[in-house]
Length: 487
Ligand code: 5AD
Ligand code: SF4
Image: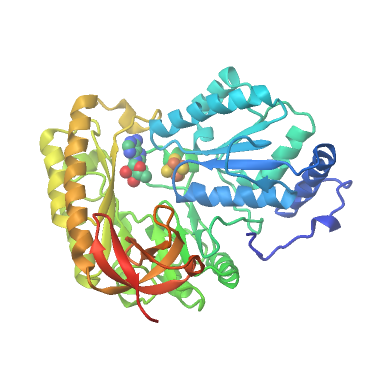
């Protein structure tokens, strides 16, 4: 599904024999028209249109970026397909932890074998991993079959880069160090008709000592509220009922705009858009979470009852080494204030185990916070050393077995608490946005509650995309089984 955003440019009206325009986004529409010529030639030769497959790693930001890449390719005339035997395979990579990188190298080995059978196949790489110089070197030396490489700051340029490849450049590498501009109004193909992510800001200025994101996504930049609201209105007109506002640190949204605005104020404006029924956001940094935001959530009918509040560690000493700029006491006070003001909220978190210098005592502090906050669910990660970050140079890296043992103990505690939390609303009727038909159980659909917990219940497939009342009958650990109620 292609979003009908403000600039629906007609590719037929573009003079592809003229010089490329300098300004964006028209320059990209010009290159889309040029690439379309290539697609038409492909179609004449092969009797079918070329197909593409995008594999996305990492977070919601990357998922949204992939929708933009898919939008450009669809506009050029490529057809989407979900397996890697395609004419163009694009990996949108993540580098937050080393295992994300390793998975990409694994996939590259696999597509290389496909390319040996089909030499015309094009292989592209983009996203966070490509912002690392060591990765680029490795690709240039050992992965010479890759055709197209670009980073996080220039995904809008896909058509231009693809055209360079079509015009004979053997391997196109285009990485920008910093994001100097935000290009609006390019085509987007959404994965879901009824829900969408919306970027409200890019980059990150926090420099947590373990984290590579500020180096690969650049400095923090907020989009202007009018642009965000226009995009959401267009999405709403196109059938979207739930949006997720995306940023590395949404709580610092708007502070650097020429006319500063708070994140809570932005939320209140989004709430005015009639056809939007649910609003989510990701991610909140505890140090910037304001009372104004809590109050805005408390009063809101649309902002979902879910807050993802990364803890990272429960030990104040480790938090200091992590450069998180809050301590255990402040975090616990914040969690308590949120639960007091919004009693039906569900709190989730991210925790890193095995940060350099973490002792058993530090780890017990993490367990203590988990026990006190009682997260509905939590993502736990083994610390992964990222080259170039301050933590990579710290002494006392924790031995693997010690970190793994702590990880297992933490996970067991989190799962036990999640199970207890999930039963809390048994018997109640709650609204669920139906997201898909259930592929495990014939005749069932799966919905998401405002608090982000899933519920499976019998229902026809045409419920997908609708918000319906569901009675929660039976908790099953992390989800419920339910029954749809009369509306
Ligand atoms: N090692 C392990 N986990 C990390 N994260 C970020 N960087 C690292 C790292 N070097 C985790 C954090 C963050 C989540 C997206 O990934 O918990 O919140
Ligand atoms: Fe991975 Fe971070 Fe990039 Fe998201 S922003 S894809 S988590 S490195």
